[in-house]
Length: 170
Image (cartoon, rainbow, N blue to C red; front, side, top):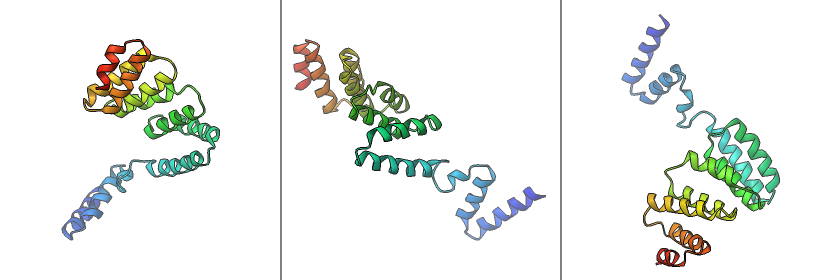
């Protein structure tokens, strides 16, 4: 009985031109109320958290930011921006950023900028061959990506492959 009354109410809202209300009610009934506002569940909380973390970054409170990011990422391991921020703050603290950069890359593997950033992190850790592969992957995804060519050239030069490096600077 409830279900038929619910559907009747949806139909009446639809007929009165209340399409948005009908859709919101339907999404809520399916347990998808987080989509009513156009954001996945927890997106508002993550947005608030991100704002607070960026404030810590602007205040140069890198250690505090790093601790908070570890806490949040334990609860939300698929938060791409969190892994990016953790990678950045590790770099600022002159710490190994490979793990958070790799986690960001795993979540955003089709983005050439993510591969290029990962290459920079690898280069900072002295993993020049791996960095070169990351820059090559960035170029494969975006053949006109000038920064990736430049970074690949630098790494190849550092590896002693001067002729190959020169070709990437052109």
